[in-house]
Image (tube, rainbow, N blue to C red):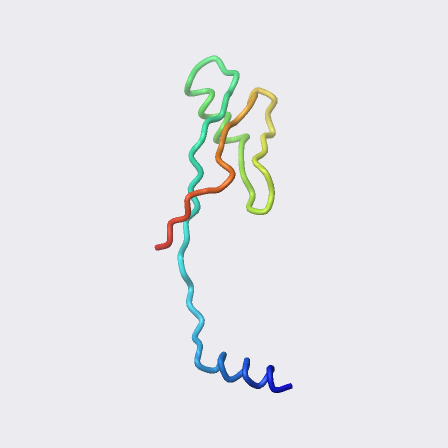
Amino acid sequence: MEEIFILKKIMEDKKEYKVKVRFVLDGEVIVNACCKDEAKELVKDSFGFVIGGNLHSSDSRIADWDFPIHPEMIVK
């Protein structure tokens, strides 16, 4: 019970702040396409990443990708 009181007392002096963060992953996607513009369009439309999930593709023309496991974190 005393621990709860101490925790509440500590939290009374705290404020909540929003901190903007950007995560950056630099990598490569291997695409089977007729030209570079088509390859870029396929990646833009059919390749993605969800936090807590994996890199994914919804198009079979995206053959492979190479990205680091840990993104660069930029705190603004």
